[in-house]
Amino acid sequence: MFQWYVPIVVCSAAGYRCFNSALDVVPIPAPPGKYSGKERHRWRNAITSIFNSALMSVITLYCWFSHPQIWTDPIGYNSVVADAGLAVMSGYVLYDTYDILMYTDLSKVFAIITHHVTVAVATFMVSYETIGIGVLYIGLLAEVHAIFLHSRQLLIMYGISKSSTLYSVHKSINLVTFVVLRLVPFLFALYCFCTMINRNFFALYYILPCSTAVVCTLNFVLLWRLLRSDFLVTNGKDGNILED
Image 1 (cartoon, one colour):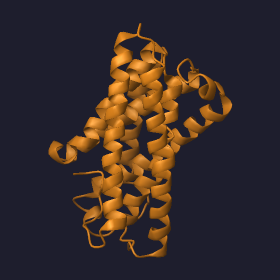
Image 2: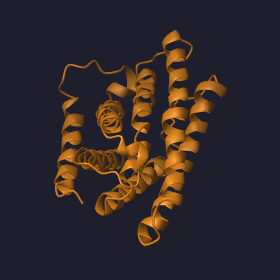
Image 3: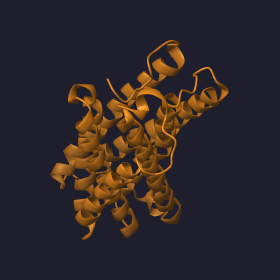
Image 4: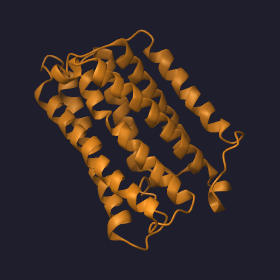
């Protein structure tokens, strides 16, 4: 394991928490209504999530285009930048889990917490054994799509009508990137973990395919919620597809 993994995870979680808290003092116009009051935490969480997605997108794309080994040997690929990126991502997952549970009942966010726990376990195991890091970075292409997923939340919070041109264009891009940059990479990652992990790594051989299958299932559920909210139902609630 990268020797600075745990310190980076701790610093990352603390950094995201500080970023979240700083949103209450920086001059950013808050959305109207409940999101400037009792549910302001959801607005802060959405902005922090976009920041994380943008940061991880940069790291992921850098690794993709500067280290061709990801393409040719996703199981054996490793680099200091990739290790550090996984540590930063783990710190975000730790922060986000705390932030969500601090304000929301577990029953409403069970799918998100399941996703976070599964990702944290898989990331730690891969980082510890330094096997399959390239596969994780294939899956981390989902962070590019996450920019559109979380910005969708902000559009709704700021009262942008679903019938507006801005929202119509955004929901189309969101759906395309969901399939191309989230579902397809996750399914390919599932294929890699099911076919390329050596049986000698007993825990990885069984846990990684199972954890990736769980993440894939949760994302199919998320896709259905997105389709139902943006394309099938015209008079739904606030469209918060990340909660049950």
